[in-house]
Image (cartoon, rainbow over all chains, first blue to last red; front, side):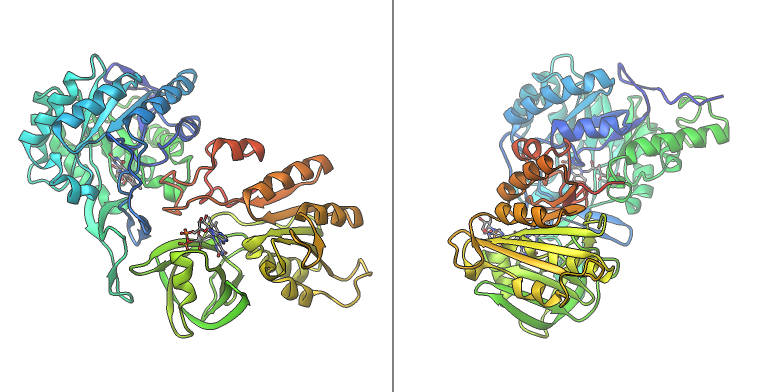
Length: 308
Length: 258
Ligand SMILES: Cc1cc2nc3c(=O)[nH]c(=O)nc-3n(C[C@H](O)[C@H](O)[C@H](O)COP(=O)(O)OP(=O)(O)OC[C@H]3O[C@@H](n4cnc5c(N)ncnc54)[C@H](O)[C@@H]3O)c2cc1C
Ligand SMILES: Cc1cc2nc3c(=O)[nH]c(=O)nc-3n(C[C@H](O)[C@H](O)[C@H](O)COP(=O)(O)O)c2cc1C
């Protein structure tokens, strides 16, 4: 019996639970379409803010023994231009049946609302609210994901500006109680939670005696992040009832199964695109199907939250 | 992750170009692939692999980063990630290599690989003036004395300059036409400025010649994830490149089959 990979996420029906994570290849309609054609269940665009940003100078991303570290610096064309790109992407993804998730960030609660309104006009299927980017703290202060109050304030501001478009609030792993932050966001109107963003970290080159990234610090992703992400998703699943996009270190179908067992509804894939190429997202979905067949799971629901 | 390489020799190629030879090989490097070279506190930029054993990079001083590389001395270190991206794959037994400006950087390595396999190689080099022509002498040195025997590997070098100060006056595409007329290649390999590549793409299409071109963009992650190095739509369409094609990982060379 062939396992059924269909994934109900909010009011959407994904052909499989694998979602392209924000900031990986989501910078143009061409790239979003390419990942969709390569088998993703849904795709997330790169985060955009109120105004264009060039990002940090190189080095902005490097691989190390257990994954990646990056400080791209939220390179984006600004909300107006992003909305045009999203509208085109949405039209191109429609015939493929692959939903589009937009992603937004901003420096103040008010700006979050403004960006949300501009992006909502492009009618993405969902808007992810990135309150957790570790790489722009100098300009924007502590990430909003660090306290219940700021997470709730941003969530409310965004929710007021997006009409009927559902929002997913993206949380940071480096907080004392991620379950409480998730609960605060949900109480403030979050329809879903995305967890997690990268873990703040740093690489120092021993020969150079210098930090490797030009921004000095960056976000750790890939295999090193997996146990951290599983713990975060597990805690969130015990704290709230909304769907979760579990993200962090997912590289194989077996990893995806573990994330579902931690309570995720859908599973994000980012850094695996570096090791496995653009087809990573679709390939992981195929591996998940093989794992389900082997273990006798017919549906995602049969696995979801098993470890809770 | 970066690996340190120590400069063991520096060759001056022209008034603004140096080739840096390093202390060890870069395992697995193919012609057309590149490395990300990092100088702490200065930056990190892509450079074509000009030689793999030992690693060699040819650098034109045009700005802050390439200028900083030019200030290195023998014994200094460079931090390198790579080999990265997709390089050239030799197809057939007679190859036409076309380099514009510093685009010749990866081509000597490619020519040597072809000659070592017993193939024949024609080279066309285009530049603004005589002093901008790079590596013409180095290619000629590779030439085997008997150029008429199709059985032994050989190399023919044609140079064009905008002002006629060296070789033929005009664009490199003229030399390419002449090379094709003299000895039709199995495949054309090129690296250089976008206008040269788009003109060459048209020419190859007219002649029904398979071609592999190396493209340039602003590279950032070098890992195929950040999306910074997509070519603009106009270039992509002029050269018939697929949508969403990433220079850093799908390329820099396009046109390799399989
Ligand atoms: C895949 C790839 C391979 C590359 N291989 C090489 C290589 O083998 N050798 C090499 O020297 N460079 C190579 N480059 C270019 C190199 O990465 C840098 O862009 C270059 O060194 C300029 O950096 P900069 O910081 O010194 O100057 P920038 O301030 O970045 O550039 C200064 C100005 O010079 C122009 N420019 C950039 N490169 C050149 C050039 N070579 N000749 C004339 N004008 C130029 C720029 O467009 C800009 O207007 C490659 C680029 C890519 C994408
Ligand atoms: C190069 C890179 C850029 C990223 N950019 C963003 C971004 O713009 N917005 C965002 O919410 N997350 C961003 N992330 C975080 C990812 O979406 C994801 O949460 C994280 O990488 C963990 O997943 P992974 O281990 O599968 O990569 C980025 C990650 C990487 C590696």
